[in-house]
Length: 138
Image 1 (spheres, one colour):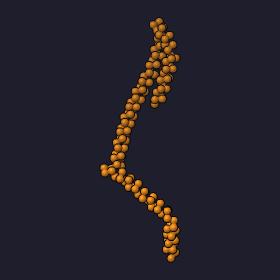
Image 2 (tube, rainbow, N blue to C red):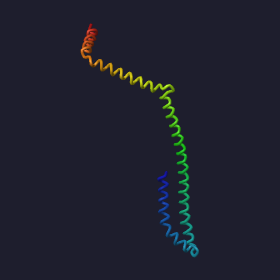
Image 3 (cartoon, rainbow, N blue to C red):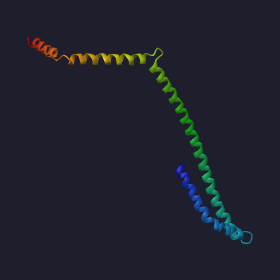
Image 4 (cartoon, rainbow, N blue to C red):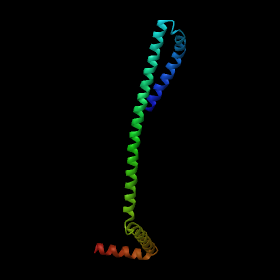
């Protein structure tokens, strides 16, 4: 819409520039020549209609932009509220999330330590595999 409005204003500028010299010439003869007066009035009326059209478009665009701003402000506010609620929920009143994260890190460390212990005892792994094989085939 703003691009269209800008195009309308550029068309008006072009039309005004092309009419200006003619209007200036007609204005000099307006009191002496009825045709000059009619032509001046006609050209001026066309320019004025175009200005009114542009003004109405600008007012409509301004109204729509203000409406969009209002909706955007409301959506932004709602998003902020929802984000705050999500953060509070994640933190919990007793800090559950923080505690759970600590527990996960601790358990991951324990698992890593157990895997390291297992991998550092290849003989036991071989014996365990042989024992599993014996139990499966007997």
